[in-house]
Length: 543
Ligand code: G1P
Ligand code: ZN
Image (tube, rainbow, N blue to C red; front, side, top):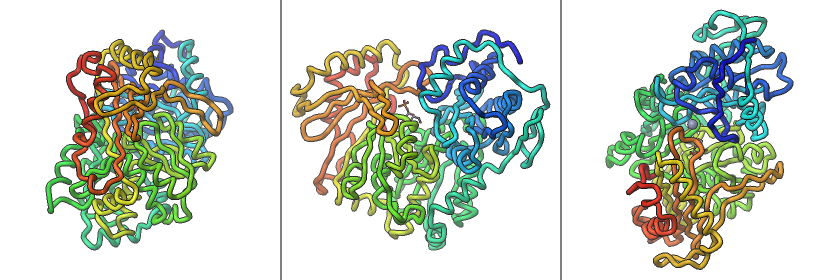
């Protein structure tokens, strides 16, 4: 038992966020990580003698915190820790390990797509026995505990050798260092038609996977190159680096620009390009000459999923986060299955998956996943795409265009304003909130506001209600603009503006996206005074 100094983790982070994310120097303060980990353990019950899974995305400070977490797990009475070799476990792989080995839970060290390094971001999150992010009940308890914590338990022991697979003993607890890839690769083999995908690569299909020097490198190399026979070099930036090579490990069109440019380079471009983020739960999908928005990707995957053996029996329902486009809704309608609109954040999908109300879910922010784990899963989405491409024998572009022709196209874009002063961002949202009731009927250019509200979610499984999840402004004709503040940024506030227009007419499916959305973008500015309220002339990122 050690007394801890007054570094109260979480003190300035709002409760309800599913983990703690701060700059590395903050985590390096004396007892800081220890206090947070003890707050997690103090908020859990009944884990004596049980198994805890530990792993992270390999970013700077990963190994140090893993050593601390192992010794604290021993002192707190866990019976066993399973830890990824080298301290590595992607978020979806950790979710799978927790489920497969019926662990009590897991600690995942990651700040997802945020940069890594001595002055960049670090994070700790807790996942429960279903493999998914801790429920709000648990995160609230951790938050409360972290405000009062004044001591923690840690075993006096030598460092664990994280590099050799096998079992050792630490202060009466078993530590098993496991291959981080094997169980995950086996799960993928069960879900997808590896023979068909191998056949496609055998016929000269060319793909590039950019692991962004983050955690998916070893997973992608083993699965794509070793098991599916893609040529060596298919996986780029495949070695996880503590600072991700100095890049943002965020698979969007800004940070994966090289991949995007390659895919748009004309006839010589590869057939398929994909990327994942820091901890392996996000995906970017680009066909030769065509970027597939995550919202469209969710709809396309749902519409074609029965080509994959693991889903041959069909799906029970689809869930998407509220700001994600309604493209998937049309697929659900056609299939006659349930469609659920949840607040942003993966944890809301967990209940729906556990209750088997949905099989597949996704977010506009490049997260897609299914009931195979309880996290979004980047490589899973890539493999499902490959399975569909092999099954249909058509190009990405043909598949996307046929989909639009059948269901209509949801033009979609997200405009981010990063690093806005917190007061100004709150002011913008507050002003919109105050005017919500007066907006219906307002004319902005050629558009007329039909409805405006602040999204509230009623969980159909546990009946919980989550309010203030984003302001939706729906226009006559079905187009919409959504405003919300990011819950994951670590400096200032990030305003996200989501813009969507539905276009049924196939003759109008070739308009450049920002052009197709121009009147809605202008309406967003008029309604929210974005420029003057944020002090920004333009978004910092457009996706
Ligand atoms: C962002 C994404 C959201 C995702 C989350 C965690 O959250 O928008 O969809 O679930 O990261 O990866 P935000 O910063 O918008 O709160
Ligand atoms: Zn992530």
